[in-house]
Length: 135
Image (cartoon, rainbow, N blue to C red; front, side, top):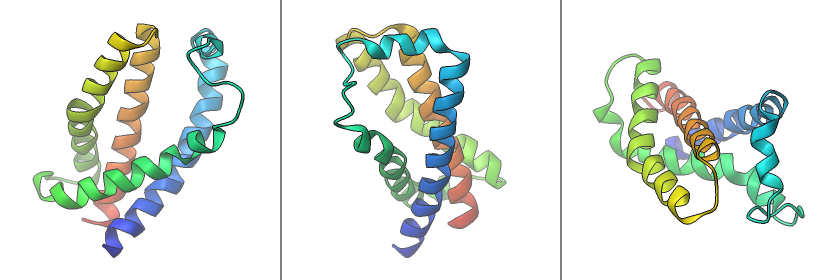
């Protein structure tokens, strides 16, 4: 349990920095994509900003538990294990969620693709951290 918490906390901090920095870069380089976030589908009054910023911590601890349960299936050096972990998570969890989101919500394909890629990058980074901290 201690390794799950420690690796989850380390991954959380890294993902928070990467996510926050990535948000600024994405807005700068893909501004047209973020115009859609001004629509009525998204909460833009700031009342739930804390939930948004907690996301890296929630996903890191969930992925840390997942890693601890299935780390024996991922072979090779840390980077390869992290890549495989990220791809596995993306196929079994992200792809179905993105599919249902696209089919049920009034969002565009570029938004769904960006969410999928964002989740994939998060899972790969977390997987590499887990492979190094909790091999």
